[in-house]
Image (cartoon, rainbow, N blue to C red; front, side, top):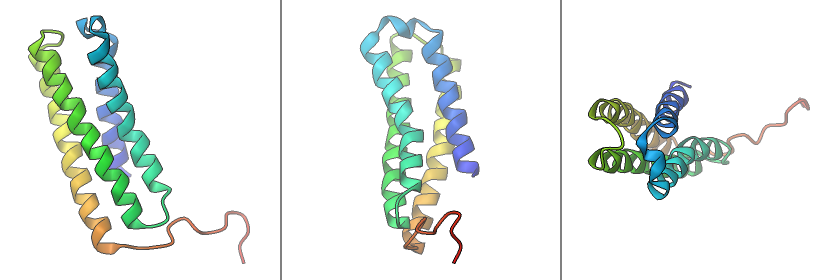
Length: 126
């Protein structure tokens, strides 16, 4: 899914910042960014396993919130001179694109409201 690939791109870009900047010296801010970043893909995956589109959308809302949290905390890291303006701008752009994709997908899922997602039998065709 393109949205998952965009989320992975965002996550990898954030991990890159976490691994090689002055940010490591601010353990609390580093941990907050790391946890929120992990939450994006985790919520997307957990939501995909829900039994309905409404359930999936609920988890995507959480993922979208985590994207916003990561970007906000990266802005704080920039304010503290832990990262450069260019590093921030790249992640802001990725976060904005991902947030827009998530928002559109959430709207779609809420409108479709398909139920019984994933309730098929694997390897036991009847």
